[in-house]
Structures are given as structure tokens and as C-alpha cells.
Amino acid sequence: MSQNSNPYNLKTKKNEGFLYEEKPSGYFDAEELINFLNKRKILIDRVDNLPRFANNNNLIMAKVKRVGKEGSTPHIYKIPTETKIEEILNSMKNNNNSLLGRKILEQKKEKILEIFDKAPSAAEYQKKIEAAVGEKDKSKIRDEKNSKCETKTSIARKVEQLLGVNCNRKLVQKVLTDKRTSKLDKLNKIA
Image (cartoon, rainbow, N blue to C red; front, side, top):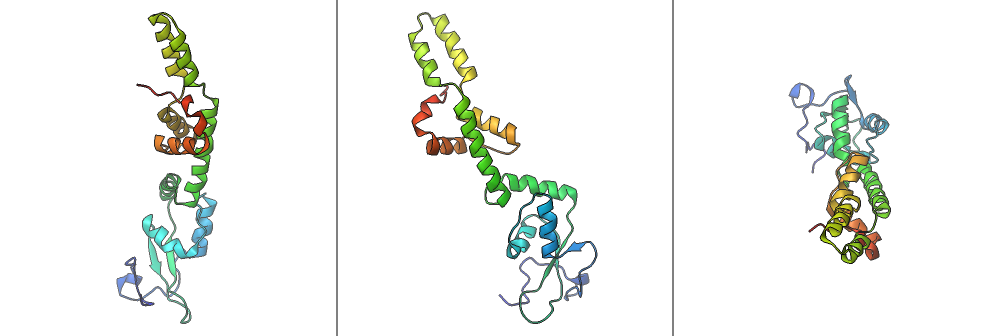
């Protein structure tokens, strides 16, 4: 790739084929943008990934004329609106590859284990159902089991409500298999 490459098809000043001489107002350089985003809880630690991040999140970028001959042409970024910030935050919260997403993934795992550990055992209720004599008693215990015991789906829904991010039963299954293998009979399996 040549030093004058333009992988994101950035517009240059008045689209005449040359670069901005200096940063116009309403734009941030890379360092300013990272500080701006980090203050708004959008965690970014690598400057070299900033053009890709901006491109993926539809932030307006441009190029500024480079001082000297070394390095790549610097990018500038239009200051994002609050709506755009919220959109990026929501996207990153549900993306396990972002720094914010990884932090939230750890919180999800903790909540899954917390909810699972607090839930009563479906296996214990199953023993009560088998020991019950009449169909009326069995039905009553079965209803109580279904209302109090957790399923993978119910745990995922509770995590979604508590953290305000997406969670699915596949993640619940993975976490419980990794951390609570011997206690999986605690889950309610509704037939």
C-alpha cells in the first residue's frame, strides 16, 4: 500500500484531490478523539485502529497534510454527536471484541453464576414430585418448581434486565458448563 493510499475513500478539501493544510474547527485529531470517547465510556486504547473504528461506526474522517516524510498521513475526525455516542456505546456493549464489551462479558458471567447459585434446585423439586401421592399434589409441586427454579433462558433474561445488554442461553450454558458442571441438575428442564 503506498503512502498516499486512501483505504476509506476519505474526502479531501473540497474533494479536489489534495489534503487539508490544517485541522478545521469541529474536528479532532486521533489523540483528542480517543480522550473524548474515553470520557464518554467508549474505551479505545490503540491509536492505530482508530480509522477502522471510525469507519465501522460511520464517523466522518478526513486527512491532513503530513509534516515531514515519515509515517502515514494523519486522519482527523468530525466530533460525534451525542446520538452517535449512544449508538456506538450500545453497539460496543453487545460486542465481545471491544474493550467495553469484554468488561461487560465478565459482568454477564458473574451475574449468571450469581443467579444460578441463588436459585433452588430443580432436582430437589423432582424428588418431591416423585414422592408425592396424588396427581393434584404433583401438579402443585410441579407448578412451584417451574415458578421458582431457573432455566438457561430465564437466567439469560434476568441478566439482560439487570445489565441492559444482550445475553443468550448459549452463553449461560457455556458459563455453567465451565464453572458449575457438577450442579447442572439444578437447572429446570421444562418438557
